Image (cartoon, rainbow, N blue to C red; front, side, top):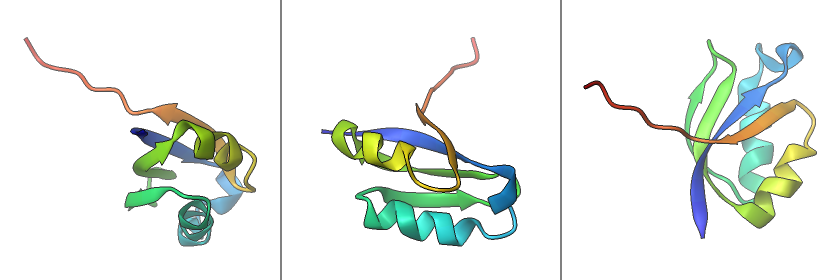
Amino acid sequence: MSERVVVTLGEEWLNDPETVAEELRRSGMRVEQVLDQLGVVLGSLSEADAEQVRGLPGVVAVEAEGSFGIP
């Protein structure tokens, strides 16, 4: 089962986030949005693929996407 994730990119990749996004796609991630100004990629990924993605060059962190509400 896939879960929505936020992938944080390393500072050295902020000028070329699409290269990392393409590697994420090849590793099984369904990339939904690349926020190049923030250095993050949003999408969905299985837990098994998440382990592989964590080891990719340019990836600093892979975290479950959180949600919040305003009371």
